[in-house]
Length: 347
Image (tube, rainbow, N blue to C red):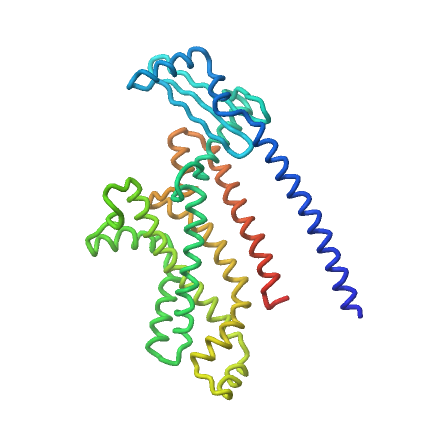
């Protein structure tokens, strides 16, 4: 009776917390929509430039030599516009648009806010294809864990196989990839393998593709990360399989099931629930390890941050990079916690 009452109280508290969370999320969405609708347009931002800058922009319209570089970044509820002219009388003007108003952002806090908007815009890869910034980081992590789990299933089954040759090969693979640094593995796949076999990763794509170098680097990074993740996932899957009571194997054998059918129909389905927490943890680890792709100039969050710092000399760029990683990690951690509570065997 006490257990039933406790469960009813828990359900009631869960519903109350869910309603509060839903209201907060709804209010945030409404506020974001209002701020997004009321933020100044690109035309309004550009019109804020000084008369001198406006004259230079007009001259650029009829000239092949551009004197003014105009940068406009619209980031959800806030936007940023900067003007920089070249030549002897070089000028720079910056503006931030928020809540229907335009603020000059050449100094002080407004300048810092404008820089942050610009950095975040570039790191998220807004307006760019999927091979940029945060999108690349999330895509690489997702594909890595997906292929890592697939590879891990075969390696785990191989390691616990009764065939000594298959078992030793699988164990050797796992030992090698868990015993060497991921960065070195990335270098071997990206630099050493093409050198040995006489090809370049960019050759996988058409010569006319101006993204061939980056796409090739992405394929190399995915292979290196998936091979590494496969070794870790294999140990996760092996531990989950071996945690199943031996009586399950004996019962399956008594029913006349072969070893393959026992694994496929009885053991692995039960093991899946035990795999969820560690596989989710592996995803988070890969998400953070994805920053290593800066070593092969793949344009993820870290590489873009480093490039911005080099070109603009502002170390502030690493603050939004840190926040972006934290937000992405927080979102996936929240999702995985919900999955674990729903499917995990340890309830």
